Length: 113
Length: 113
Image (cartoon, rainbow over all chains, first blue to last red; front, side, top):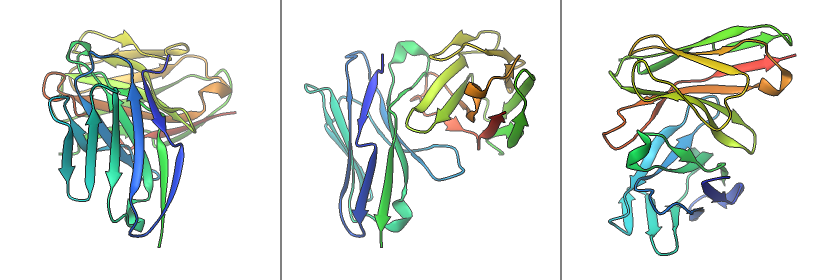
């Protein structure tokens, strides 16, 4: 059973537009929600993360919105750039699982110039 | 710091052959992980090691074995490779009790003919 569900599978956005990727989870014990960014031929790297005590976290053009009651969180990329073209993974974990992350299936983002 | 290193980068095997994928980290992390990445399936956990001397199964352990050789090194072995094991394999590591951020290696692209 997939612990974290991610949509859409692929996303095409024009340069300067807003990219939005959504994730949903069922396990209310999750207490850490990161987003990873992966460029072709590379390993994933942490982009931004949030804990459930806040509803939003912003780092530059990247924002996580978190809705605890709906068990959903999303990544917003403002002013999307061609250099943002990558695969994005959401994930979740809980303190009792000793650092293990449960990943969504990924979203391939393409930003057209 | 080299971070997380993996060898080899590429490998082609014939069905039934065996091989070991090597992973090492120099960040003094206590937890290490092996994932496989397949198109549309995201990152699936094969095995993980929460600390030196312990290993646990992840989502897709069948056909694999692991060894946590010491705190730095975590190897993944395919005893009898099958075409279904064609994938990109990533090793990752983290401090399990410090925010859960996982650091990934560059990956090994394995093809089983």
